[in-house]
Structures are given as structure tokens and as C-alpha cells.
Amino acid sequence: ALNLLHNYGQHTANLAGFRESRGDYVITMDDDLQNPPDQALVLIDKAMEGYDCVFAQFEQKQAAGYRRLGTKVIGMMNKNIFGLPDDLVVSNFRILRRDVVDRISASRTAHPYITGQALLYSSHRANVLVRHESRAEGQSNYSFSRILKLVLTILFSYSSWPLRTLATIGFGVAGVGFLIGAVYLVLGLLGQIRTPGWTSTIVLLSVFNGFTIGMLSMLGEYLVRTLNAVSATEIYHLKGRAE
Image (cartoon, rainbow, N blue to C red; front, side, top):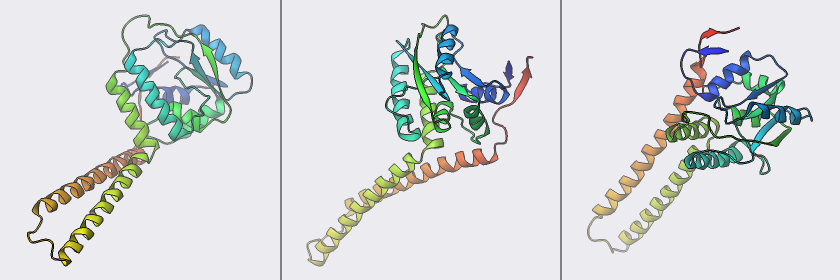
């Protein structure tokens, strides 16, 4: 057992466990008994068929509506960013072979995302049906804000999609601006404009400045995360260890 100095989040805690593990296979599961421990045997049996990564597929998931919605959003991101196959369902209840665990442990990132990394560093994956129970007691710590934070982590740490999307929009707005400029130039040459267009100037400046600020903000987010990844030698610290 590892006693982390702070609550670094689920995926960082998983990474800490991976780096301490020594077994040929590693299983990750929730500690609230929604993943019944006896179902780990089902994962093991499937992994023994030669798979390097097996995800549990729940017969009927017991979770709040906003969490199911969050799962769908993250699933779409996994498909687009990590190449999640259409016939594969991912979950935090999974078994990974030693070589996959070693690849994840060796990766340098200040923002680990174990599910995505498991997809990146495995090649022979499968699902197996397992039970999913209601939470034994208490409430889940995965609030809407934490799910949103995870979505942003995936987007900014593993994908250039936000930057490219904003750049595409910026180029589109620039094209419209050039078109409007050309129209006003032609009208001016033909003598159709008698009064300078104050409103048009303000609107164009507002649009262009808005997209400029948005682009700079997006670049700043990538820069911060790049600096964190380069400068962070340890993303977690141990307070103690139980043998």
C-alpha cells in the first residue's frame, strides 16, 4: 500500500501503483465495491487467452446520469484521439500485461491518463462482461467539475485538436475579413461610399481582436502544459509505505 502525500487524482495514483507493481499482470478497480472483487477472475481468464489489455464491460452500469453522459463524451474523445475501436468499450476496471504497464510507467507526462495510455501502448485488446454493483456507501468523488477537468486534460495533454480547430476558425474569419475589405474597396473605387464606415470598423476590430485573444489563450494553455511536462521530475510524492 502507498500513502500519497496529497490527493493527486485517480490516474496519478494508478501510475504510482504501476511503478511499484512487480506482477506479470496488473488490475485496476474502484474501491467502492461497484467493481465486485470476484469479477477480477473473469478479467484474468480473458487475459490468459493472450490479450495484453482487457477492459471490463458492465452488464448494467450503476451510475448517475451526468456520469453516464461524461462517459459518452470521454468515449468519443478516446475514439478520436487514441484510436479506440468501435467494438471496444473501455472502463477503469481492467487488466494490463506487464509490458503495457512498463510502457505506461516509462512515459513522461505531467498529466497521466491511464485509459488512453493503455490504448496507446497495447495492441491486442478485448472486452469481457462483468457485474457492476451499486455503491456500498457514501457518494462518488467524481463530480461534474472533476469530469470536466478530465476532459480538458485529455484535450490539452494528448491532442492538438483545440488548437487546430481555433486556427481553422481564425483562418475562416480572416477570409471573411478579406472579402469584406475587397467589397468596400470596390465600392470606394466606384464612389459608392460617402461616409466612412465607423460601425464596420468597430465590428471588424472586435472580431479580429477576439479571435487573436482566443488563439493566444489556447497557445498559452499548451505552453503551460509543455513547461509542466518538461520541468516536472516527480508528479507525486509518497508519505509512507506499508510492506
